[in-house]
Image 1 (cartoon, rainbow, N blue to C red):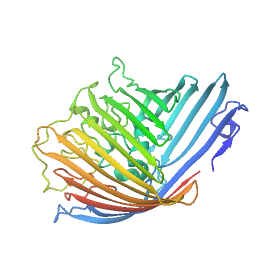
Image 2 (tube, rainbow, N blue to C red):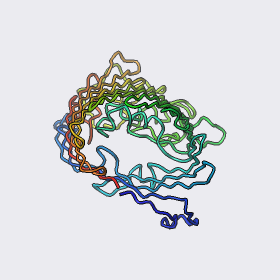
Image 3 (cartoon, one colour):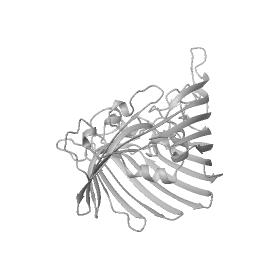
Length: 403
């Protein structure tokens, strides 16, 4: 149950006098389940292509577990001050998410009024909202990250640091967005910079949305070389050695739509990822060799070092069997171009599941997914890549509770 607290003093670290018109909410979500994957890379000296099955207790297969605070203060004249602090964690281990950042999911402060909302800090960009409305991520969570170019298209909710974000007021179902992430590099505004924009229109049973995001290379190594989180890979878009500070390293588009008719809901999304700094990695993938790292930057992988262009197609149909039980399904295909290679990689994934709501705050979900790779390495569905094999199946049963 969400708890509204009419006093900022509840948060001892915020020692500002509370006002009657200020509301602070403490909220959270816990998501954990048991997952089976039939084939994960387990190479040995005797068998470099070896695989094995795995059972695990996972956290956040559908949504990442989180704990947060958010507040709104009425400033009068239609103006409000707002803040949001949110951190992710793993239910199965208690470990912090987002690399151990205390409020790695969201850390923002802003103002909202008749002319829109402005926020400063760290949070997701607008593509995440388009993905939530119109892609399979709402029903299948992290199970679809791999086929979505290892999340380089930002369907899984990547974030940007040092950002200023503006959203227009909702006008007859339409909202517009613009976001800018400062690279904070002396002498160069482009180094480490990120920016994006988007729009969403919702009218009754119909909705359509669009988002764009791009990042420029910074000066650091790994996934922190720009103001923007880049996804689960460390491909050409995250490696300074592939370019120079200020070079555009990632461009992402997403377009989605949905329509609801009675108990049926159909949705579809298309996303495109460009990595302008991708480099030559051979004419074709050495598929006879072992491959372990689902999130690696090897050539001929989703979002890897020679993957310069990707198109992802995500289509789904849901059916409400009753007020509390939903049948969810989707099919996805992503197509990959590799620098200097005639090989065109392809990933195809089928998903089927059920979601049963015990209440508005607690639901039980179960789904199965099958991923097949062609002319490239498979990134896997969850828990790791299936080695040099091209097929993986995963099944999970999980419980999600919100408060």
